[in-house]
Image (cartoon, rainbow, N blue to C red; front, side, top):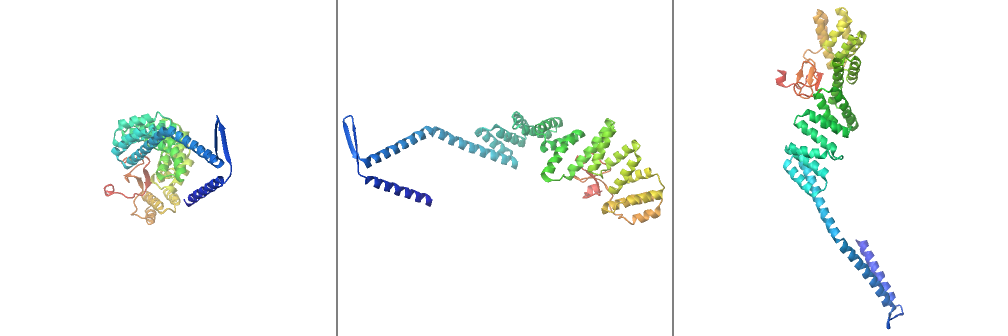
Amino acid sequence: MFVRLLSLFVLIMLAAGAASWLMAQPGILSIEWLGWQMEMRSSLAVTLVIVFALLLVFFDRLQRALRSMPGWVGGRWRERRDTAGHRALALGLMAVSAGEPMEARKQAARARRLLNAPQLTGLLSAQAAHLAGDHAAARRYFTALTNDKDTAFLGQIGLMRLALDAKDSPTALAAGGKALDLKPQSALAAAQLLQLHADQQNWTAALAVIAIVIKDRKKQTGTVPDLLARQRTALLYLDGLTALETEDDTARASGQFTAALRHDPSFLPAIFALSDLYLGGAGKRKATKLLENSFALVPHAEIADRLLALWDDNDGNSIARLIKLIPKKPALVQQAAYHIVSDIAATKGLDGEAKRLRALHDASMAAFGWQCGVCKSRHDTWHSHCPSCGQFAGLRWQQPEKVTPLLDG
């Protein structure tokens, strides 16, 4: 501000100095035209010329301002309208996030009236209608979004979620598939399709979409969540089982079982399936090696029984070979292995060895079993979906934890 005032003062002083200098200059200007003669001081003539030029500039600016007035007024009106429309859009989105359906619909209607942006206002209207439970209106809005290439993906995602709410799996699969076609690397669409394909036992299709989800998680966090990793292992096993049972494709089944164990070497269903496949193809040595390695990772009574049958040795040697496979850590796994081998020794009548082995493990330790990581329910066998809560690949072989009194009883 000070600099501007100083500049103005200097300019006035310069103008005053120039005017004073001009007035001090001698000279007469004489004009003769059509019999008329006019004489004036040359300094006055220069001053009149300058004033005339300034008047020309003033009237030119005034004429331009008058001509642009309607556009300026209209622009200001559109600016205020757009500002009000964007404010309504923002308030509507906030209302959707806060779960206020009435306010969301009110702001959506206001935004539609003020803004010429059908993609944004249509999406807000669809979300508001969905939140309010008006699925018919939401379906109309989401369907309208699918007609624009810029919003088609969001429209298909909205239609898929409406179908999921209505428990219409075929429609949800169709909409989700179209969304994934529009954005082949969309983890949002792939995650929804994963659950849908798993529920319908489309294991091959589920494997295709889980690869997209895992790739996205690795990109975002650098790791794969435990549940997602278990789901991939389960899908590989289930896909191999389907290839074996419906197509009799032992090569593909073996490849899927091997892939499942590569991701999780302690996954018992794949261990048993692959060992059976080896034995069915006269691969006794492979089956034995697989079961021996597996017992050291995840001690299980059925693995021990299969090893005893494959070794075909006397009881004392068989128990000794099992003892050699008992891992030294972790402690819980070691305790479970001692428990299994001591029970087998007792069954074989080797009471002394059974007593010695019982002394090496904690008898009060709860036996390992299949437990859901979500609802904590326990089950005797592995299932693709938890029988209690329906979680896909939710069952884990572990020592029971956080068991409720009802389940414990």
